[in-house]
Length: 153
Image (tube, rainbow, N blue to C red; front, side, top):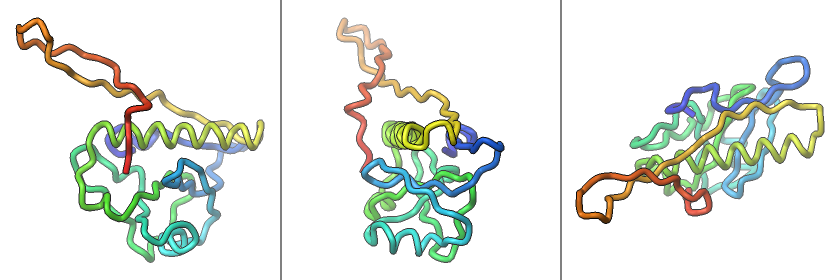
């Protein structure tokens, strides 16, 4: 994702190429699309009340930009289907982390489904939450965020 770098998540086939554009849906499933499909066609096939967002253009504390309807999906790129209502909200660090986790899990499931045909490279993603120290000193303490508590959408 944009704020982590475009190489955070990638899928390659055995010859080292990027065979498809990968779309992570709101339910966490992964759909692969071959060349020649537009953002509007993906939305029409999946969820009309959603927006398609390129993972390289998603940043913390910014509004997620929807891909223009006529934009052709790039092979080897990861996209997210987000509820259209999310385009009016700035993305928090927790939401971006949840998207990264959702993509990672979808890619791992795809690897299991396809067996050894596809090697998946996923960089670890961690979210941290800072809390005020209850000792009254006002110090911040770092706690790992519970992945199950991260929500997107």
